[in-house]
Length: 326
Image 1: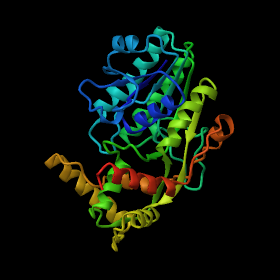
Image 2: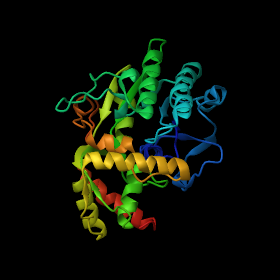
Image 3: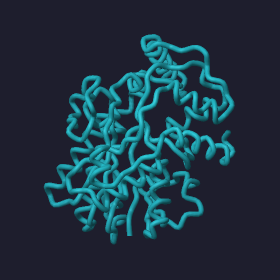
């Protein structure tokens, strides 16, 4: 039996689907009262609880051979430091301790590429890149770096754990939707008025889920594995979306400086109104960042093999269309 924390999430429900296709018996963790539409029709045992409650975790992990820890707070907007610390850092520490107490054979922790210190442009980001919270500028990145170190520290206590670090996750079964999914929906609805400079490395959510399973089966204890996909520019994403939706690309293209200024204003407006800003300073910085990422280690040791990201974009649009959201 395997346990998936954060099972209703985008990567979580795709992982559950992949595990079930492989014949696994799956127990999925969800927050009390959380929307479970992403798990409807799936043969999964759902238990409700919080990673901040270690006694609950010990009960939830009872009888589990493998635990996939995905539950976390994802935020590219500043001002959530305490929640990120409670859930992403202390919650992950609780998961590691509960795995030791419950006798779980293997823990697979889903970190993030943002947990690694960004090197200078032109330098390839791989598993040798430092995971140092003090050198990471975003609150979210720092929380994932701290959580990664918590898991690696637990291996010295006898925990058999591996860490995977996906890049930007995108793909079908995006019920909530994710940051990338919301951008696709906004574009399809004509709500993206401008183009931005830059790009990022995105990975298909189905490939990331398969990478997690491969890490559980073949990963070496205490090792990190980057699950990258393909770097693609914002313009190229919009071109693919335009072909898939029939919505024309916006003509206006903003430089990085103007975009950063507008993002700061949008964040301030969001704080005042309580509405989520369309862009944030953090998201603009990510698009400008060094995204030269290598998943060669995962490909070599795990057999990981991601698909072309343009196929993913088309599949995601088609899923949103079938779901009635476009």
